[in-house]
Image (cartoon, rainbow, N blue to C red):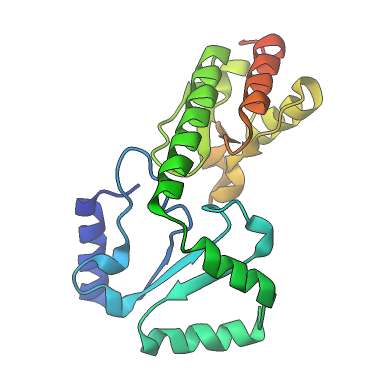
Length: 212
């Protein structure tokens, strides 16, 4: 979650060096501590920004693979050329359904955020009780933790142990790093599950994970 000041700094550098910006804003409705700020809304940025979004996260429809790009005409030309050789087309009935979803009232987004914040609290407090160091999560439905209190060699070894011995799944974060060593102490959990599943996962870890 970038502050307006940080985004303004990035924007000024983009303008100064004539850089195009592609922003993935699929979690724009899942910002918890502060409002999401779109890069294209900043002065001088609309004409050099392609804003990408989808139904996947906001409406829990990741399997539909329906998204969109918003940009000025001179940038959408390139997007359309790429699209014609990659996706080309998607299901027409699902596109009609997507149009209906995008007309959802503001109350839907308020309820969505409230629901996720309740689930986030269950997972974050549970992970702390298990013994993880939990890092702040200002947006999305992911929580990153430091797994090192449990004595496993790296994130992959920890996640394999968690699956086989505890029955809980986490994601090793080293796969997201240019240098995997930078992420070897961190793993990622998600709270886009029902509350009972989250509580059950926490109880399994409390019972079977031991600090070393």
